[in-house]
Length: 351
Image 1 (cartoon, rainbow, N blue to C red):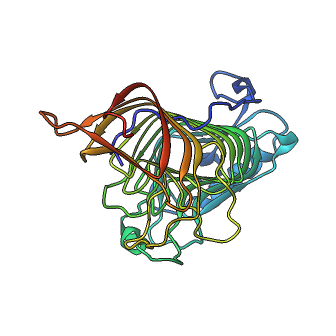
Image 2: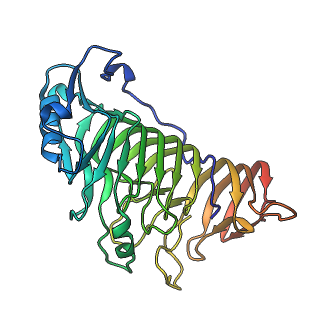
């Protein structure tokens, strides 16, 4: 896959029912501020998870607009779970202005920071979330049934919400994961991890309906964005991606009873792939206004199963040139797929 993507669209209809005017913005609107330092959080090396949870509990119960605030400075945390529902179905605004760092050596099933069962959550602040994951990357290599390290920021059962203006780096595994979410707007994220960091997907989506991801910079050792089972109505636009594996659908078809991805070309995540043709059929996918460079000569590679060929695939305004420059020209390859082409096509369309 090309190493850099500027834009990709997989379904264009997402309606956001929640207005940003509902959010509590300290300094710009009247709201009660719950600063974690007033609940015992201190900058330095100690674990602040209990102080953070105390501040969240107070903000979540508050009968009015509330803001959960992490001020400037570096705060260490072990795993924390911010649960809802909150008072009157309204979540506190979360403003991270400082740096959150994972404590070394913690062990958890699947998350470091988790938000669950919340409505109208607004999260941002321009701060940094550092997973301190370097010691975990060698253990993320596995074959079939494996247990990955912790996701840095997990949203589970969150609705009508937005996440914006945050930096995430060096996660133990996935940086951000949306699971069982609905009507989500993501923008202005900067996600980074070294190219050799295994399974550090930038954003992973699963069992989620109506999510827009835009105007973000993502570079990791795995997928910039991965779209998993049960994802519906996904819009991805204006993404700078690289290093990484690009924007991927899957893995799919590995387990029984997986739900379809609707509104969106898989790759094999293992070192050795099965020689059996895939039974998963992909159709109704549009790649639109994608610009960037490719480290490989084959910049567009649409390879589908001989048992379940892809259908109704559209490429509209594609411009992927060789990163090496000079006389290098990119090419395209199509296997077991019916493709329609529109607008500019660099490389030349495969027929």
